[in-house]
Amino acid sequence: MIMWLDTNRDGLQSDGEDPVSGVVVNLYDAAGVLVGTTTTNDDGFYVFTDLLAGAAYTIEFVKPDGTTLTTPNVAGGDDALDSDAPADTGKVEFIAPASSTNSASEPDNPTIDAGLVTLVSVGDYVWLDTNRDGLQSDGEDQVSGVVVNLYDAAGVLVGTTTTNDDGFYVFTDLLAGAAYTIEFVKPDGTTLTTPNVAGGDDALDSDAPADTGKVEFIAPASGTNSASEPDNPTIDAGLVTLVSVGDYVWLDTNRDGLQSDGEDR
Image (cartoon, rainbow, N blue to C red; front, side, top):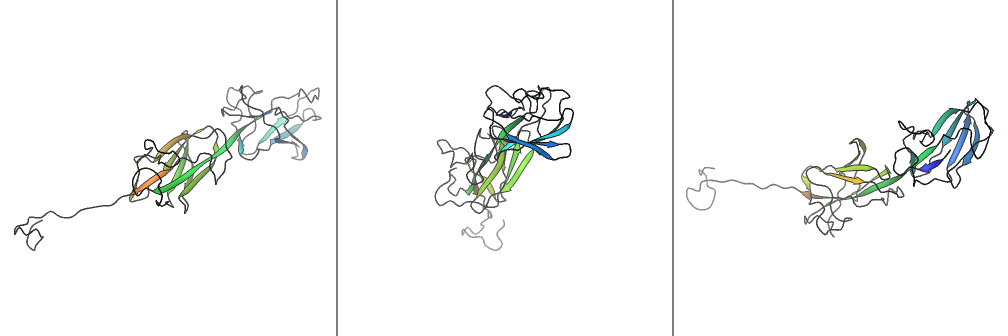
């Protein structure tokens, strides 16, 4: 009956993972009536006593702000160590034991646990790199309306946004410590500037290569999940405008250096 921080996101209580105190846990009877509420203690422990033996109940874990619930009921996991609550509802239906001691320190059913995962944010700027040095410089404009995509470790698109009037984008609710990829979609008539210039400040350089526009990264291990001050504010992209040049080659038969009527191209 433990609530813990599942830092490795494997859905199991592992050595070194901390318990979480102060989490609200609710108990509902078979009719959906709230019959009990408590909070986890300093050891992440909660308990409900005086349940009717053999009766149906539901436990609800209320996720603290900035967290989500880890993967429940992982295949092959020890039921005493896994997480049971799905992230969408936080609710676990169960039947109370048929016989019991009604102990508050050693619960008759000690298997209904929940693991939390911290949520974090990532975001920064897209700008027009007019001097093409791969760094954000004074006087260089931010670029609005650029599409930015977010993919998880399996390559599944999990978010999309566009840069605002300040060239800023952000993604929130990333799983702390998980692998992701950000993709900057180049607007027509542009390419991406030189990425990761030697000696450059990571907060000011461009990270996306011109061929793919994609940047792989690991989400921060902890953070505030802020949309205005991202936990990782270093994944930027500089754009360079593309232009064209061209004209004609002709046979200057009168050798005057000018294109004249009747001279062939």
